[in-house]
Image 1 (cartoon, rainbow, N blue to C red):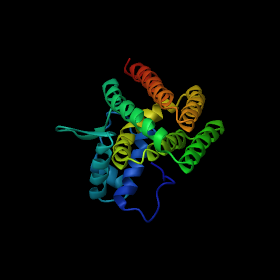
Image 2 (image 1 turned 60 degrees about the vertical axis):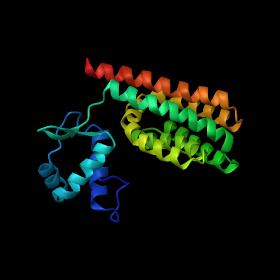
Image 3 (image 1 turned 90 degrees about the vertical axis):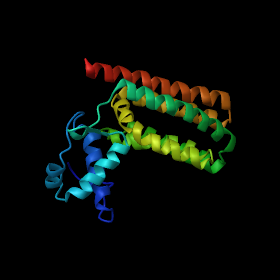
Length: 225
């Protein structure tokens, strides 16, 4: 478990531990089903058990860790049911968000969306790109649309859901061909929003999420075989 560039000396210890464990789960260093032993992790990271316990609670909130009776915390398995549950909610909320964004986004918002799309494309075209950096750039693109809704409650709910989506997003972005497809999909979505074409934008975001669901479901099912 190495250092992460997100981590700095001013962060609370629980945040440092949380980010370290989160990165290890997302990168597969901590495998689905693996138990998280507080004493062992505390010794490995050179901290007390308290920040480990707090970090595990934060990871449970993100859906990356589950608590099992008599077994304690373990890394959550990626299941088709969990995928369907999360994406069913995400699709409905994103369709609402893009509808409102088409109506409410300012030129400044549009510029932020273009910059985010360009950043994602730039990362896709880089050799040896980091899948976690790509995932963050993908999140950033969608966040510009959420922000453009001007609906604080919707932004908050989608923000909470984003964390539960993170591992699925990582799984999706492992495929190099998918990354190129995403660049095109982002362009189409952006164009529809810029034209304030609500019907087309809503359709495109729905198709965008459906494709993710189908690809990730196939990946999960292959892991279960």
